[in-house]
Each structure stands twice: as structure tokens, then as C-alpha cells.
Image 1: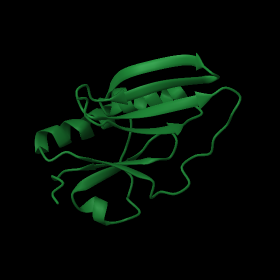
Image 2: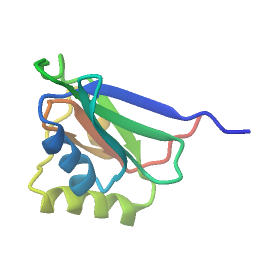
Image 3: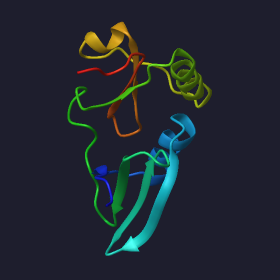
Image 4: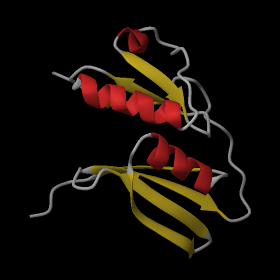
Amino acid sequence: MPSPVLRVARPTNDLQRLADFYTRGLGFDVLAHFEDHAGFDGVIVGRRGFPWHLEFTHQHGVTVDRAPTTEHLLVLYLPEPDEWRAALDRLAAFGVTPCESENPYWDRQGETFEDPDGYRIVLQNTAWER
């Protein structure tokens, strides 16, 4: 029986720049991509074997706005200090610098970054436990 998979999808104006940010900057894998599928190009990124991924699309002839607020977040919990530090180093090598989070909670054990579309990614150096 296949297990559920979470896909978060959103549009972009610059598919390649966004894909580079998530693959070269954050270390995600390209899981799939498509061109001119009913007027859309897209890329799906994530981590192989994980039950989630992100899909970014560009609709031909359509321009989309940047993130509506700085509170539109994608939070990745990276509890292992070495893995967290490697992610920060990879983003720094890619030329991305942290920004102050709108909600100070995320700055206590994490670093916040902004993707090319203005959406924020928090790399949280703790486990999520509930």
C-alpha cells in the first residue's frame, strides 16, 4: 500500500533561479521536471525517499507576485548539529545570507533565509516533538 506524500506547490516567475536555490543552496534533489505541460513548466524538488516534496511551476505568459508576507515560512527541523551547520555552509557558499525572522521564536535555535521569490525558509536546529 503506498504511503501518503505531501506536495507543496506554488508558482514562480523564475523557475531556474528558484530550482537552483533549493538544489544548490539547500541541497534538495530534483525529483522530476516538465516543460510545456498544458502551458506550464515545472520542477519538483525534495529528498529522495522522503514523503514530501516541493513543486514550483511557471505558467507561460503569467506573472506572479512575490511572497505576500515575511511570515510565509517553510520550516525544516535539522536536529543534528553537523547536518544543520552543513546546510548553513551550503547556503553561504551559494551566496545566501540569513535574515532576521519576523517571529523571534525562529531565531532562537535557527536561521531564516529568503528564497528568490521572497518566501522564507527556517533551518531549525532542533527536533520537532509533539
